[in-house]
Length: 281
Image (cartoon, one colour):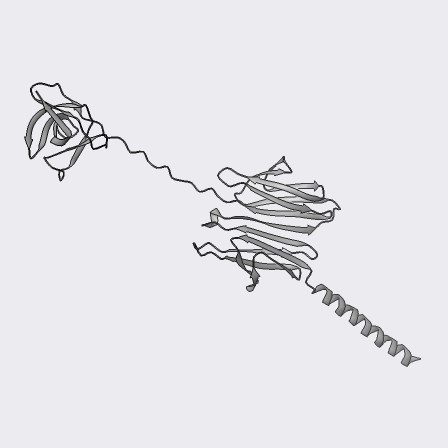
């Protein structure tokens, strides 16, 4: 009788151990899905191991993993992206990334589902950049991030994230009863184009009262003006501009240049070529 009891206990122990091993193996089964997409395509590393190129979908054991994306770009060097995410069994974790020339010009989101005690579906939205952004859910304003909507209808939803100075981002995600849908968003900063300064037009010298000989500006080679020089030649400094129709008193001539009486900032006379002027008395 004692032998039978001993054998039964041994068998029961073996069965219990087998069940424990089965449960342990089930816990190690990869049932947590990771889906990664990017623009442009990028190499994907999980815990420093390359698993492929985007778009990609793989199953892992649930838990926290480190994900790194290195974009494939031949036109320019784009910044890589890395983050940590917690994978939940029997759910998808989705990472989307749009690479910009700089980190501030890049955008994307991480979408996760986490079990919760409530049988309803909830939605949490946070923004990595900027700190606060406006949220619209299915066309209805909800407020600003960080935002928690304690109860949403299970199913597909459209979330629009906006902020001044950033590019709007539209996200499609599915809420599931008994889970909290969490979306971590990064908006791309809009590139600020520096305004092109408008050059200040040089004032035209004021014509003086005409007495004796004078010249009239008549030809500008289609430029619309004639440069006034500090001496009789193009190698002399520019002092200002005159325009067709302007009349000035003639002070002298030299090397086919006219010296004219005019009010300038640094002097009261300047020189223009005779081919751009007509002399009269």
